[in-house]
Each structure stands twice: as C-alpha cells, then as structure tokens.
Length: 167
Image (tube, rainbow, N blue to C red; front, side, top):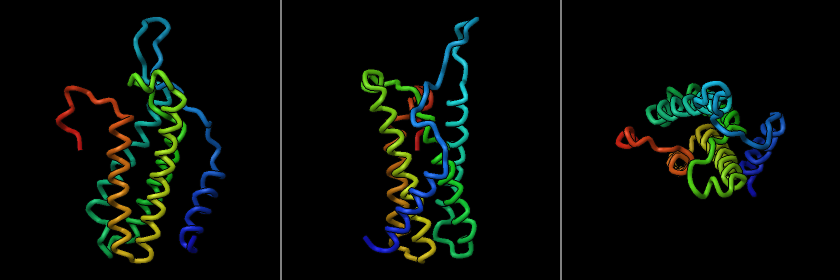
C-alpha cells in the first residue's frame, strides 16, 4: 500500500472514529398517532438535508473540478461533501423493495457501505486535486458519479410522476 493510500485509509478511519453515530438506521416515516397520516421524521429530514448538500456539491464540482482557479473552493466543497456523506451514515431510507423488506438489516448495511465507499472516493478525489493528477481526478470523478447512480437506483424510490427527470 503506498503512502497516499495509507494516509487516506487512516484519514477515513480517524474521521469516522471522531463521529459518534448510531450504527443502525431507523424507518424514514412513521404514522401519526391521531390521524394515521405519515409524517416526516428526523431521519427523513436529515437524509434529505444531507442529500441536498451532496447534490449541490456535485453540481459545483461538475463545473469547477478541473478549474485551477477554483482549487480552494473545490477542496472546500469536497470536504463539505465528505461531512454530508458521513452525516447520512445512520439515516438509511426505509426499505421499499421486496428484498429490502425481507431483509432490512442487509438493506441498511448496504446503504452504510455505499456511504463509506462514497466518502473514500471523495477523499481520493481531494488527494488527486492536491496532487494535480488530472487522470486520477477524472477517474475518481467518474467513480463518484457511478456510485451516485448505483445508490440512487437502489435507495431512491422513483416517483412515477418524476421518472423522466432522473439524472
């Protein structure tokens, strides 16, 4: 393992060790006791807040990642996205597929693994930006986009009215 890989692995471990997060997610919605209507819970609100920040970061990076004049802001955005990703770690969306409902532990574990994978890619991308390694920046950016697409295909319930709006 080279020095950069060791640094990134240790950085991710240290970052996670500093955070105190519940290990298991909870359901995203609970019925109201009086009306029976489904209300947003803290889980859903926190997940939406973090995902919105990640989406905003992705948009900024897509326009500025290879712009040398924006390097400082790119690094700030990457670090902010790392924090947002870690903030979602314990806020797995409620299962909505047959497989997810049959094995909610596996559903939750898969979500948390993808969040860690995304955080690791964000760290690699930050390292590549610092190293001015254009090939690694491009490879990490593509991996990040692929992880986003994969995660959304599994964990984002598609609204029939909005299916034509997907990235």
